[in-house]
Image 1 (cartoon, rainbow, N blue to C red):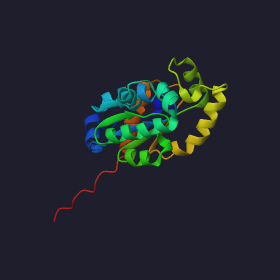
Image 2 (cartoon, helix red, strand yellow; image 1 turned 30 degrees about the vertical axis):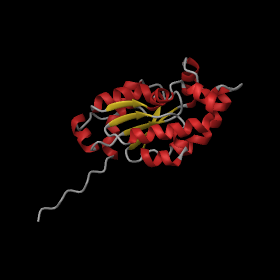
Image 3 (cartoon, rainbow, N blue to C red; image 1 turned 180 degrees about the vertical axis):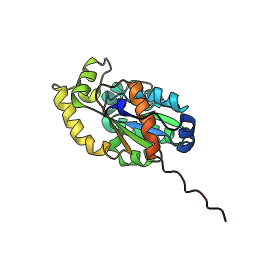
Image 4 (spheres, rainbow, N blue to C red; image 1 turned 90 degrees about the horizontal axis):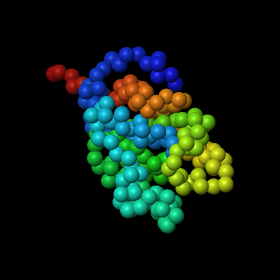
Length: 199
């Protein structure tokens, strides 16, 4: 998607915020897709709060996600992730950067669909490059062949990510450009409540 083709935004961000009516935005996508780096400027433009769900999980657990995986396994991590998401979903007017695997539990979708779910779909080669350059440890990629593992995870999760309300395909755009693109696409997603007819 080329963001240069976007028309000048017809409506101002305050109007957009009004139309969102406090609905939170949930960013989903693979590890390395830029959910946190896109979420911050997006929240700033909307006047929303920003929450990085993985950071909250680490705060609650008192250790890193890698340590949770190592100590308790993926299943325990997913349970904690759902608990944290439930607590986040009770608030409103947030941009939430979720973990890559949040889409694998149907109960998480129930919570996220109370708001608007946006899939940051990064091209595979770009994703591999980002993960290669990233200093963060990714527990699921700590295998002999990370690229092969990534492909397997992508294959499993792609149909799940596809349930998002909005898909943003990212090639080499910066997080700021992606955030601007989302702001311009959002109005088309929002169903305004029907206006009451005068008697």
